[in-house]
Length: 108
Image (cartoon, rainbow, N blue to C red; front, side, top):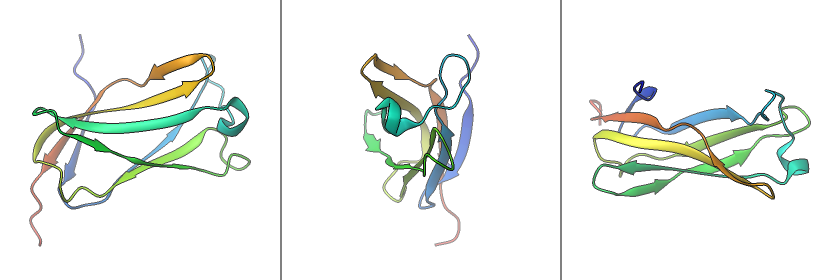
């Protein structure tokens, strides 16, 4: 099994991750029309959970578009796991699991 994709990020820096929801055929989907909701969180090895804020972009200009965001001042250093969950009438599905390596900030 391949290692999960890894992102390096510094504690205290704003975490932002753009995304686009696509159907099984790779087509973008208007999240409003499809009734899809999004949730996302990162989890530490000790089990601590940090929810991410979700902004749904203008679906007329960016169908399927969203941005995940969080302030990371209270996130621990070291490896975290992160995924995105999509919920619709059809059920619940999740993205692949990503790895975030949180590094200590140098400049206060």
